Image (cartoon, rainbow, N blue to C red; front, side):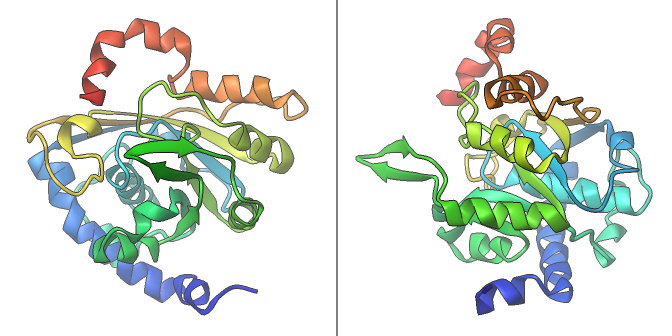
Length: 255
């Protein structure tokens, strides 16, 4: 049975209010301090209202997701490949959830507020001596994502880390195999240059931020999870062949 906090979070008026607050706060950093360039939103215009999974590479904890929410809201209002003036925040698109590590969503009041905007918090990692130890998803976390996917759009980051070219996790492929959603690959660039890892402070102003939504993947849902995962990693340009194409660029991100 959903907790009181989850029931409150699922109330659309509450989520619309939070989306509007987060949107007003973040819009200048995306459009004025930096320059956001969007491609492929025509691939979003005729998507079903449920069972759509967005898979993306990951560069900050929050700025990536916040940008996606801006774009979804703009598309709802009929805009293509641009945000324009953010009047779309008057009635934001809220039929979307995003997967996030539980520990990052408890960092401060801003992240706690953002968690109310649709975070599917999962206990995927724990830290020891300053390092990150990776582990599998808790079954309750998996069910949480599955329930959201059955009624909404879900954003997930198969690598589960902001480190470029980290291996993808089989859990994403298993979710695709079992629930057969429409899968939209997303490739982002420039966010690690513009923002700190949490995505709440500026590192370099005037950065070109790029978000590209690709066409839905044609997936053989009966294929082994390894095959599906490889297809996803190729689509979000995080597989080994893409690492070889741009190693000099990505090394800077880990500095």
